[in-house]
Length: 189
Image (cartoon, rainbow, N blue to C red):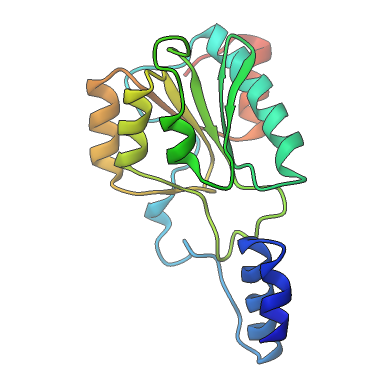
């Protein structure tokens, strides 16, 4: 128990890592949370009728670079970018609170990028997106969502895609090389 209490001072990711260590010491192997349910994640590609345009791709590239720099040091898993400016960063209060704090008139047209933290243990803790997230994006007048291939739980996939199509929100799942090709060669799927 003292190990868990000590880890709790570093945050929820540290608690999960410590629990995994304790299980390993007792010869219990922890496997990825989506091992038996791969359908809960999405692989690369655009999953909506609406797609990011060239300007969006440049914003996405900058947003990912910023997010990678931020999440190496703290709890940030998500941010919203518009016109090459980070308008909101996720805090410990989560994605929902971040999206609710967006000025839907001033920040209309932003893009949500949500990735796992760099040191996050993906066996026990994957960022989750669902219909509520899409509805929050609509309320905030965001253009789309960018997730990392096979590294986010995507709940109610069909309902989310239907909602995104109805509201002209893009859902794009990327992998690093794919984004590089899109931005540098102006390719859009």
